[in-house]
Image (cartoon, rainbow, N blue to C red; front, side):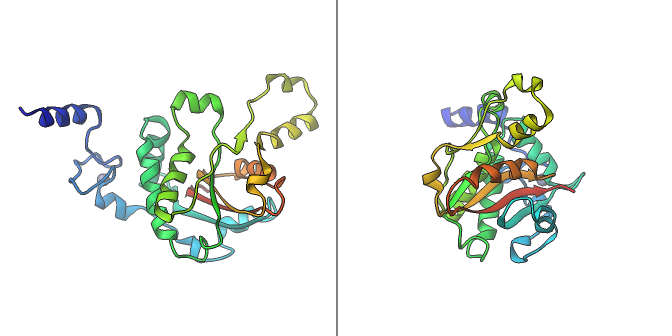
Length: 231
Ligand SMILES: [Zn+2]
C-alpha cells in the first residue's frame, strides 16, 4: 500500500466520507452532504421578499433593515441533523459549507448589496472553549468566502455571565440580560450596515440582545441572516 493510500485510509477512519444527513457514501464531487439531500434542503428564498413571516415576527424588537433565513428548520427534515453535527460533533466544515451555499444564493441580491460587514453572534466563551469554535463564526466564514464581504469577529463580544446577579432584583436582572453583548470598539461599526449571523432563529431574543448592543454604534444599520428558522 502506498503512503498516500494509507493516509486516505486513516482519514477515512476519522472522517468517514459519508453524507451527514442520510449516511450514504459520498461521491468524490460531493462535500459533507450528498446531492440528493442537498436538493431536499427546504430553502426559503425569503431574501427576495420584504415583510415575510420572520420579519413580521421580529418587527418592533430591534430596528433591523432586513432578515433572511436560508432554510426552514423542520423536524425530520434535512437541516436539523446538519445543525446538530455542526454544534455537537465537531463538524465545523458543515457550517462553512452551508454558509457558502447561502452566500451563493444571496450574491447579487438587493438583500446583500447594502451590507458592509459580516458579524457572527458570539458564543459564550466557556462554550466556545469546550466546542473549539463558534458555529456562527463558521457560517459567517462561508458567507464571507462566497460573497467577498469582510468578516468581523471579536468586536461584538459576549460578556461572561456573572453568578452574583441571582441576588439582584428582577429589574436589575433584566438589565443584565440586555447587557450580555457588548461592542469593544463602536467606531469600527460606525455608519456600517452589518449582517448579523447566527445558526437558527427561534424566539429571536439572542439576536435582539445583540441588536441592543450594536445600537450603541453611531449610524449603524443591522440586517440578519440565519441558516434556519424555527416556529
Ligand atoms: Zn444524503
